[in-house]
Length: 583
Image (cartoon, rainbow, N blue to C red; front, side, top):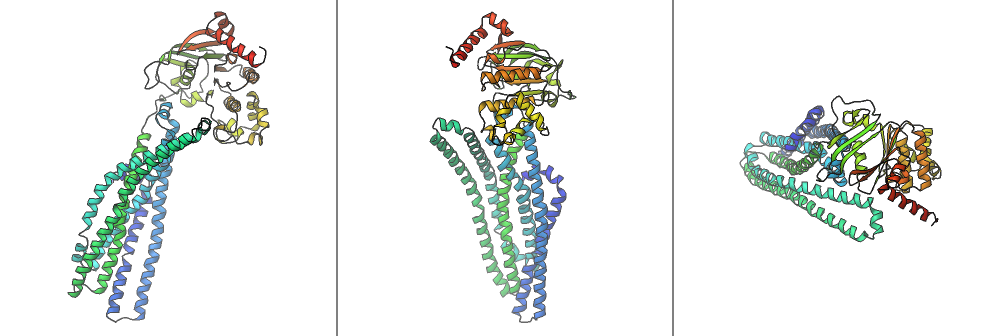
């Protein structure tokens, strides 16, 4: 029953709905006592052969009235109890999704997508069942069972009632034993479902890679093994759950046997009438559902309890990116200064960045180059506040970026990451994602700046073309340019391009950079790239190696330094000539 206590905050919030719903359940429990009593009376009247048609019609009318009353009260409890359960589902879904939007990169590194999807589907459904089926079975078993037992005592005989209830303590013992086992079994079952979810999501996303390497059979085998493991754990849940119903049937069977034996003796001794015994047997029949409800109740509560624990643990995880009280709300702008003595990724030991110091004045462009893994993307992540735990500080407009609210900082930054993500919507809506109400003219202007306008016009439906999940219907270069248009359309104070031109040809790259230089004369730009032609016009270029700055200067200064930059420039120029057929 602990899950009811854990959900106490919700039941207090929706107490009106649940009071009405439970009251209707109580009325159903009371009204349904009438038919067995009426049937017993009619049986006694018929047995005594002392009845009139009008008397029979009266009792038929009472039965019809009881049926109508049950219909009305059942409608009421369904409306308010199931309605309350729907409110819980809505509230938890809202909380969970809001929590997802607040969490940082560390959170998403620690949790697989399949796990998050399982929390948002199976776990929430199990919790919703507590507020719906759980309340129903709890109240119904308590009130229906209790009122039925009271009716058996008042309308028939208290001694016969006690005898018939002798097997019931066995049910309580069985429920207690199986309850804890069900909780653990269902938690394992939910974890297995999360694994299947994650595997399916990963395989669907990486289907091209799987097919390219001919790993379809192996992937199917891996998926099959995970399904088999989930089936084993689900069978454990079903086995424990299935033990309730046969045991309840056994308990009811014993009650029937005791009732018939002792009830027959009571009739022979004129303690009760035949009609009362008929009513009593009907009441025992009415106890079947409350007993089954107890078994179902433990199933629902243990499933809900395990799921609530899983969801609650996730909701209590804290983001490492904390906004300060009285944070600056004005959009971040101005000179950007980075002074990082050291940065180490969580759960790692060696620093990824060391002694990184540079300054970008408003309106300037900074180029960042270096080998793969040199730390380029990590630097940009720190500026975007994906990580806050580092030695040093980053300032913008003279203020530490941690002093800005996240909205104030990020609305002033437009970022095109290495892994471009497009949503399953039209090209137009992807470009104006940050400002959905922008007019078509502005969308086309951003597309022209990113040199993608002509490509879009060549699509089957132009700007209304759906790009598919993650932009699957587009080429890598098209995805990059749409991402650039999406970042540029908000005209950010700081534009970050993280290897965002790697999939376009040299001519397209030059056109995009020229457009950006013209349109963003008073804005700051950071370009991280492997292709040095992307940064050659920057006012300042830094070369990274193993998280440290090993060279710095303008394009010409770095060429004269005759270091890594010069060697890479010569190599890339030679490759360009070979590709162009000049060598």
